[in-house]
Image (cartoon, rainbow, N blue to C red):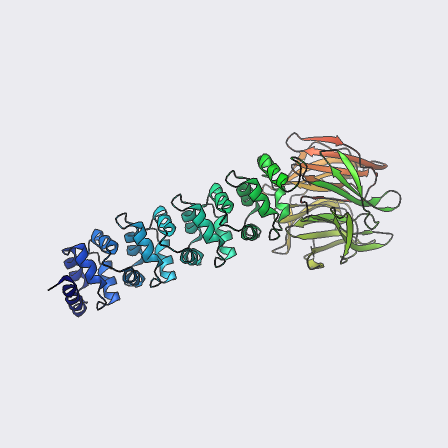
Length: 562
C-alpha cells in the first residue's frame, strides 16, 4: 500500500474516532513529519478535526511546527486549519513564532484567502507572536501588500502593535510605505500608527521619505488634526527625511496646517527647517513677516505694514478699511482683521493676501471693537469687546472656506483684552470689566467652553502673542502706561514676570519664529515703537519704528508663502 493511500485511510479512521483527539495527537507524535503532514492534508479529514489535533497539548509543539512547515501540508489547507476556531489563537501565534517554521512558509499561509482577515489579525495581534517575527512574516514577498494592508488596517489590530511591527528593522521601509500609501488603508488608521510612540521618529521619517509614499497621501495624513503638531515637527525635522521631501509634503494642497511650524520645537530644528524654507523659496532665515493693520492717528486709518525682522524694515502694503480697535489673526497664508470702529461699531472682516497685496471682504462678524483675536487650526476666533455701551462676552469662530462666523460660548464680558493661542486652545487675558482685570480664560473649541485660569497682572489695552508652548501678554494700562510682560504656562497655570517692554497701551503683538514682537501704541502720544522679545535672554530689543505711528491697531504674522 503506497503512502498516499495509507494517509487517506488514516484520515478516514481519525474521522471515526474524532472524539479521541488527545489519543490521536499522541499517535501523530510517532509519525514522521511528512506522514503527519499528509494525514492532516487529506481532504477527507475535517478541517475542524485537524485544528483540534494541532491545538491539543498532547501533540508535541515542535511536531506541530514541523507539520505546518512541511510542504505536504498544502498552504490553503494550512490556512483553513489556522482559520478554524478549534485552534486557539495563542497556539496558532506560538506556532507561527517558532523559528523552525520558515518565514516564507508562514507568509504564504497567512496570505492565503482561506484564512479570514479578522482571524489573521487576531493571530498577528497575539503576544505569543513576537514583533520582529511578525514584521519578518508581513515583510516577506509571499505576503501580498494588499493583504498586509487589509490586516494592518483592521480596527481589531492594536495600533501600538501595528506601530511596533512597522518600526521593526525586519520590516522594509519601502514595504511599510507601500502599505500606508495604499488607498484601502484608512487615513485615520495611518494617522494613529504614525502618531504612536512605538513607531520611532526616525523610522516614521524614513517611511514618509520613501518614494512609494505619495506626497499627496503623506500630506493628507499629516494634515489630520489628531496627529499632534510636536510629532509632525519631530518627523519632518529628522535627518531620515530630506528637506526637499518635507517641503513637498508641507506645500501640498492637502496640507493646510501651516501654522504648526510655530511650534516650540521650531528653534531646536532651525537648521533643518531653514533648508525646508529654502526649498520653498525663502532665504535661509527670512521665512515669515509680521503685519500691523488699521489703527488711530487722530483719525481712523487702514494703514497696513509688513515687518521684516531680518532686514529690520517696515514696508507699506495696501490699506485695509480704515477703522480703530479691530482684532487680528492669521489662518494659513492669510492675515485677517475683524470688527472695529469706523465712527460707528462694525463687524467688517477682511482677508489680507500679501502675495497679491490685497484685502478681500469677508462676511461681517458681530459688530464690536476693543476685542481680541487668535487662530486655532484652520479657524480664526474673535472674543469679547465693546459695542459703545456695553462690555461684551461674544465669541465667534470664523471659517474662511465657508465664509461664516459661528457663535461659540461666551467668555467673561470685558473690553480691551489680549488674545493668543497655545496648541489647540485659545486664550483671552486681562481687559476691563468695569474695572481693570487680569481674568485669563482658556477656550476649547471642541468642547465649546471657556475655562478660568490664573489671573495675570490686571491691565487693559495690552498685546498678546505665543512663543512655542507659552503665551505672553505685554504692556497695557492700569492707571498709567505700563510695560509689564508676563509669560503664561498653561500646564503649570502660572504667569511669570519677564523684563518690561517700553510702557505703552493700545499696541499690537505678533510672533515670528522664537521671538515675540510688540509694535506701535500710545506712550502719551502715538508711537511706532517696535520691540523684539527674546524669552531665553529675557530682553526686549529695539527694532526700527513702524513708519506710521498709531494706536488701537491689530497685528498678526503670516508663517507661510503662497
